[in-house]
Length: 169
Image 1: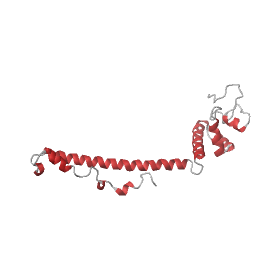
Image 2 (image 1 turned 180 degrees about the vertical axis):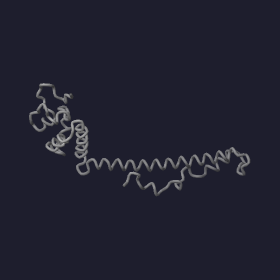
Image 3 (image 1 turned 60 degrees about the vertical axis):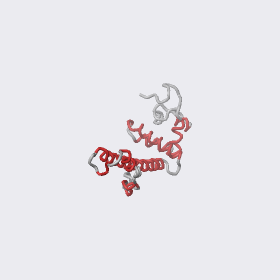
Image 4 (image 1 turned 90 degrees about the vertical axis):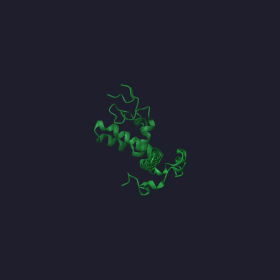
């Protein structure tokens, strides 16, 4: 069984009991999840949820699910302390905006790759084809003439799909 920051027989209270200024019993529901060496962990959870609510939630859960529940509460409490208005929703929204920007950048990069491949294929076709009507002159003059076009043509990008997220409901 996990020692949870307390030594057997010692009266060292867990972070929750220390903050609540009470004696930490041997069967303390908080002790396995809020060790004495991490006081801020419980302080934020207590500030957001309240000790009695956390106690009730932990008591209602099977023991094997309590660790995950505490991790979720700690994450939400820390997010709520950092951003009292939005909490986790603010973090999720920020990450969603980053995803949208990265998806747009990826779409642009993929379009540029397609454009460059088409251009390379066209150049290779003109250079390798001896019967091509545009094969007159030196190879360098053919390459210079084909490089007048812009490297990236925005007409190849589906502008309508750039604005919408694939994650939106």
